[in-house]
Amino acid sequence: MITKIVSKNFDIPDSHKLEVAKANGRYSSIQKLFSMSPDDVTAEVVASGLRGKGGGGAPCGPKWQLMPPVDERPRYLIVNGDESEPGTFKDRQIFQYDPHLLIEGIICSCYAISANHAYIYIRGEYEFFSDRVQDAINEAYEAGIIGDKVMGYDFKLDITVHRGAGAYICGEKSALIESLEGKRGHPRLKPHGKECEWFFDNPATVNNVETIASVPNIVENGAQGYTKYGTEKSPGTMLFAISGPVNNPGVYEMAYGNKMIDFLNILGGGMIKGKKLKAIIPGGSSCPILTANEVEKAVLDYESMWDIGSTLGTGGMIVIDEDTSMVDVAKNLIEFYHHESCGQCTPCREGCGWIDTILEKILKGLGSSEDLKTILDVTNTMNGKTICVFAPAVKDIIESIVKKFPHEFESYFKN
Image: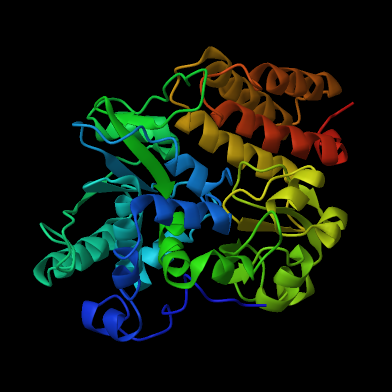
């Protein structure tokens, strides 16, 4: 089941160091990269079907094509490493074990979009990981891999690491840019049409860490080398994470299209101590929950997950066993979202707090069936009526828990 593209060097001792990284294939794509034009690189990524691996799954190449024609303005690549979604811990594997793969991916991506400066925005709590990435960047500067001439080629590239301040909302790309500009991390209103992002009014592209780390393989082996894995609409691989009461929690790279139940039982090692599976939140805590029966049918690619009523998200699966109260799960999650809402939009700010209060009431044995109706009414109000997708994501997970496990809430009602 394991297919290693991004994680190929993870198990090699000292793989984060430049000497070891180069001995194991890092920067081998650069010579071919500079034999191509920027448009050719972009076309190859478009043909590969590479999809964003930060949650949304939008195609990467077409996003690069939104950059305007090159003019006198500076252009930027912004790498989103603000991995704050509960249940998600894949990007930090790249930071820790193969930061030079990320740097190689940044070189390829910046060349394709004609950007000469890249920012890596890393979650504030990831001090160890940001230090490791910075050490790799320092090695790359000293070796002439980046700087005024990338590996001797006539292309200038600087890379800057920027640590966030611990705000979950800054994982949203426009809030991330606001934070990077030194402002409060509030999501921006979206334009009516498709366009690139804007960093200090200059064109910019934002991509997830794993997405960028997937680019060197495509440059070196071509689109066909990538599309031989996965499915027609979800080609390639992804770093899937699994946590909870399983025997082998961790991160495993697989091609899209594998069955979720096989991932749980084979790579995850099955449930610990013979416990029964109750549910899985499939792609980080904001994806609609799947019951044990739905897990049996679920396939790990974007289209299949949409068809079953959930999303693949970041591929971070949170496993829930038979002994865990779904009311406790909902309360745990809403406390997080209530705390992390930026407060800019009323439906989100008030909705998260309202649901949190109602679930507290239910857990104290003071709830009624009317409270469940109120929760569903509030989630409906939160959906599609805010600037960013924070509130709709909260709606997805809370509504799915209430609708699929109503009996667990009712067991707390006195009457």
